Length: 98
Image: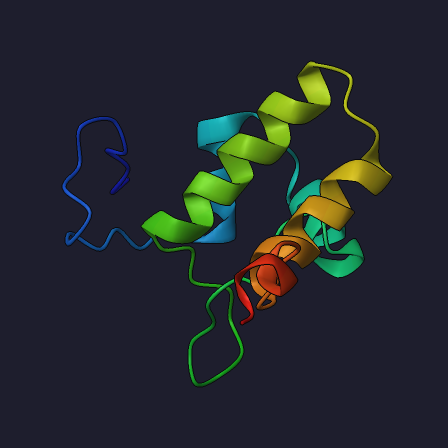
């Protein structure tokens, strides 16, 4: 297994399979696919053949999703949060216009 997220420098890339992610976070592979499908985590990095290839940035999203679900955050709120982080969202942009 190639997992070592705590204390890993931002530049280091860690790549793990969906099976390894499932074992690390104690989440079923089906749940991981579901989280991605509904937008609870952003699309996971894939190999040229289409196989999920979780990198360190993907693992951070899985950790966040697991943490937020454990805290009772509604799925819909997590999906909205992911959408906002993936787009160029500037709620206060009009304040800076001159």
